Each structure stands twice: as C-alpha cells, then as structure tokens.
Amino acid sequence: MTDFADLALLPEGLHDELPPRAQQQADSIARLTAVFDGHGYDLVEPPLVEFEESLLAGPGAGVSRHMFRLMDPISQRMMCVRADLTTQVARIAATRLAGRPRPLRLCYAGQVLRVRGTQLRPERQFAQAGAELIGADCLAADAEVVMLAADAAAAVGICGLSVDLTVPSLVTGVCQSLGLSASLAERVRLALDQKDRASLAELPAEQRQIFLGLLQATGPAETALPVLDRLVMTGEMSTVVMRLAELVRLLRAQAPELVATVDPAESRGFQYESGVSFTLFARGVRGELGRGGRYALSGGEGATGFSLYLDSLMRAIPEAAARPLVYLPPGVPRAEQARLRGAGWRLLAGFAAGPAEAEARRLNCTHLLRDGIPVALS
Image 1 (cartoon, rainbow, N blue to C red):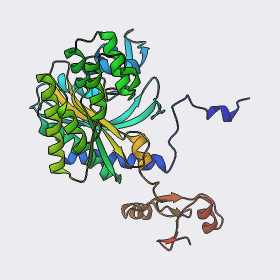
Image 2 (cartoon, rainbow, N blue to C red):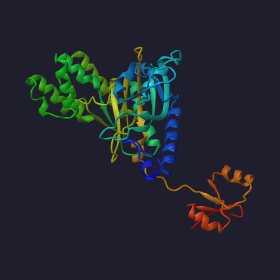
Image 3 (cartoon, rainbow, N blue to C red):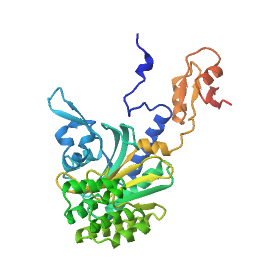
C-alpha cells in the first residue's frame, strides 16, 4: 500500500509553492516584467532544455558545473537543463536576433534548475526574472541595468535596497601583473573571497600588502574607493578602478537613496562576467536578491544584464492578505457569474444544497452572494 506521506517528500532543494504564496509569486513576476517592458525590454522565452553545446557556448561555459545533463532519446545527443537564463538570452541575441539593431534590450522570466544549492540559497529550483542590454559597451548601459534591477525590486514592494559593486577581473589582472602562478593565483582568489587574511601571509610583503589593500577597500563606496585608488595598479587595472568609480558617480546622480558598497576582492558567483558586476541586497533579507554585470557573447559582443531570484524576493515581501472570494450558491446563472467576474470578483461555485453561509465559511470564502450582491462575511 502506498504511504501518501512519502509522496510529499521531494528531493533536497526542491519544494512545492502553495497558495497564496504561489499566486503572489506569479503576480510579482508579472509586475517585474511590466517594469522591464516599460523600459523598452522585449520579452523572450527560451526552452527549459537545450543541446549541451549550444547551452555551454559563450557565457554558458561559466555555469557548466551547475547543470543537469541528460540524453535526448530522439537525437541521441546530450542535453542540459538550464541553470541560468542569461546564457540562453545571450544565445538568442547572438543567433536568432543577430540582425536586430543594437543596443538590443531583452527580458525574461522562468524556472531554472541547478545541481546543488549554496549555503545562502539551498534551493536548487527557483524562478529567475531579468533583463539583458546587448551591444552597448559604456558605463551608461551599466548604470541602466543596475537602476532597472533596483526599480524592479522596488516595484514588488521591497525597501532598503543596496547594491554591492565588484570587478571580478580585477583580482585576476593583479595576479597576472605580479606574475603569480596559476595555482597560487587560485589560492589568493579563494582567500580573498573568504576574507581570509591569514592565508595571504605566505606571499612576499609587497604582494601581500596589495591584496590586503583590496580587502581594506571593502565597504561603503565613499570610503572604499579612496582606499582602492591609493593602491599601486598597472595602467589597465587603474582604468578598471576608474570605471568603477565613475559608475558609482552615475548611480549617485540617478538614485542618491540607493546604498552603494564596493567589494573589489569578490569574484565568486561571477563565472562569466568580465566588467563591473553587482549584487542586489535588501535590509533584513537573507541572501542576495539578484546578480548582474558585464560579459561578452560568444562572438565577442559586449553585454550587461542581471537576474533577480524570486525565492529571495518572496522572502522580502510580506505575505499578501487573503483575496476576496465570493461563494455562489448552486444555480446562479452563467451570465450573472460573468458579470461579477467582469467586475473583478473571484467566484467559487458551490455544490452543496445546505445552508449557503455555513458552506461559504467552510470553504474559507470572504463573501456570500445574496440577491445578486457579494456580502462580506463577518
């Protein structure tokens, strides 16, 4: 005999979204895409599964380790379940929409699946919504996507937003300029990601001071940028720092209320970004609301964009109040039902022939239809 309790058991990192939260998430996605649409971003809808070689092309290679793989029984070719929608939008822009005028603005919303979760986000399946700005290699484009991410989060009711800016290529560039071996550079990168100062002790004093300086240049942009500016950098790295400072200036001019922090030593989580990247947070909410930044398409075309994570967004949004639901006693004509739905009411048609009010309360309705008028149940 089947134990129905076992049927409710789901794999680690997966869960059922139940009412009313499922409806609230659907409403939030609709509001997010409406914000994107209002800024001129066109919606695209890629498939859940693609052939491995197409999904891993270009920026997709950076998320390869997160993807589930399976064999297509029809073509006998390997396929991957998407772990990130950005890589699919990049493919669409580089192929199906290659002839569209640039800059190209695209947006999306959908589910992704990852091999494993993280400490901050144990969920392995969750919804993403985001936007990509393709073919504009300028700081104004970077500022646009940061502001769009913040505007979208605010549109679903999230307050206390902050953006943490980083440049994943900075640590790599510094390691190369110092002549560090690949293995030592990887250890340095890991130590910086973990803010582990002790692990940097094995480096020569001059090198150690540079990397400790990167850790010190972490915090509010107003105090972190001057520290970063004082570090000895090569010409290319100096340009990177100047671009970061200019982006902060643009954000300050457009949204002085947005809290901006800088973490030049951070690189984890930005597998395919090549320029200024960012993470969006909200005060009092566990985990990041979304990530974004600049990257290159498979053909080398520049792009920037972001993804918002609906599981984190939902933690930041208070649970919605119960929506009105009108109980209809049996026999209400269809035309009358259509009139009420047209007026915006949610209707629940009853089947029981007993007392209507008792049945309405049993089914958790908020209203009862009496003489053609929805009456609130006290």
